[in-house]
Length: 111
Image (cartoon, rainbow, N blue to C red):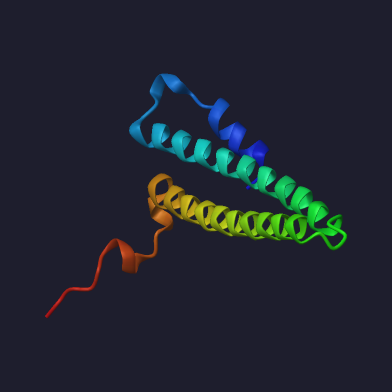
């Protein structure tokens, strides 16, 4: 889902007949937008830390700082990807409940 789809979902809506699901949808799309921005910041951080690591030229302190920055940025991107996936699943379950598999909607009866 791109940023244009998220913004269309927020701004092209009939707010006169808004329901709770519409408000929750907007909240989840806003969270997705913030996660996208976080991914951009993390990518910039990877470039900056990688450059610092490459330009250390044998200086242990600079190399360690760059390496730690790379580890932190990659960890951040992994967390952002997981969070984005979870928000997407929750959005699908709340806004489009007919898309939830039948097994999740009605659990099997216990005998």
